[in-house]
Length: 195
Image 1: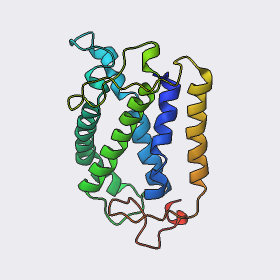
Image 2: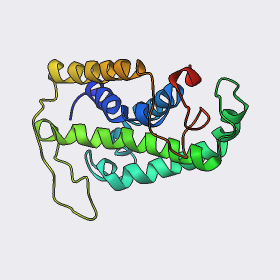
Image 3: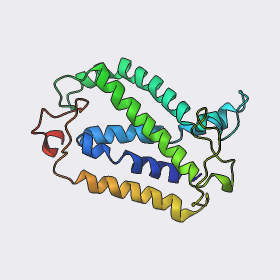
């Protein structure tokens, strides 16, 4: 596992494709959801004081990340949809509950999965290896190419993630059309529509 800096950098890298799907505000919102859950699997560090779980156990599985993301996405759809529609800074005809659910759930899943991937790159150094595909595949998965305390990797991931987002923010067009887009109006969507 990398430290918190590395996990945030990995979440930024995993969230970068959002710039191709949504405009500026959508990509920033999606990235915010991803960064917010970049540390989700490490909730086991707090939960192990009240539940019989271990670090790199059940919270470090794709199943846990997806279930928590769906739950949080459902809450976001219920409580944020009206706020999005009432917010004048978001230029859209109407944002549906389904769109907010997909947007939030995907962003939260990306953040959690980025954490698992970063831990796979370095887990055996200071913590037990992960079994991220439990219960379908219970064997540990080990890649082990990054040392936990390496400032090069931790700050390098953060710099790479932030730099990639800055580069993508300068793009003039966002070419993919999707029914879950937030902002814009149809195929003539331009970066200027989302400023």
